[in-house]
Structures are given as structure tokens and as C-alpha cells.
Amino acid sequence: MISVTTPPHPAQPGGSAAQATESGPRPARGAAIPSATLLGDRETVAIEHRGVIYVLRATRAGKLILTK
Image 1 (tube, rainbow, N blue to C red):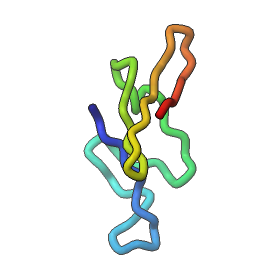
Image 2: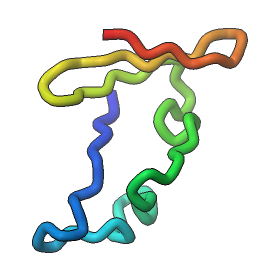
Image 3: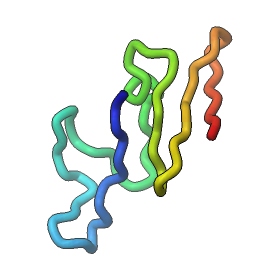
Image 4: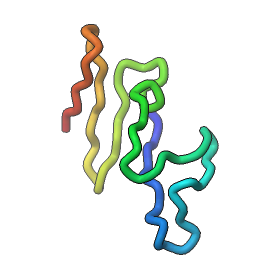
């Protein structure tokens, strides 16, 4: 399982939307993240958001489904 976090707000100490990570620069606030970046070679990925786990799933038809 991978963990996806949102970048710190630029106004926070040490926070910059252009800050580098292990996988490269973070996207600017509101920038699109390719689904392949989230899913990799998996069909599903668990995303924790505010203490709730969601599952992002790619269908055989190439659509994405996000469920709680």
C-alpha cells in the first residue's frame, strides 16, 4: 500500500508546492496527478483522508472508482 499526502501549504514553514520528494517534484496546488502515479502497476490503491480509508480502483474499461 502506498501513502499519498498532500503538499504542505506554501504559507506553512518549510512548505512549498515545488518541494522535491522521493518520486520527483510535487505538483502545484490544483495540478493534475496522473492516475498511473497513484496506481502504479496495481488495480487498487488505498488512500487515507482525514482518518478515513478510501479505495481507488481502475476498472477493466479504464474508468476509476473511488469508494469508502
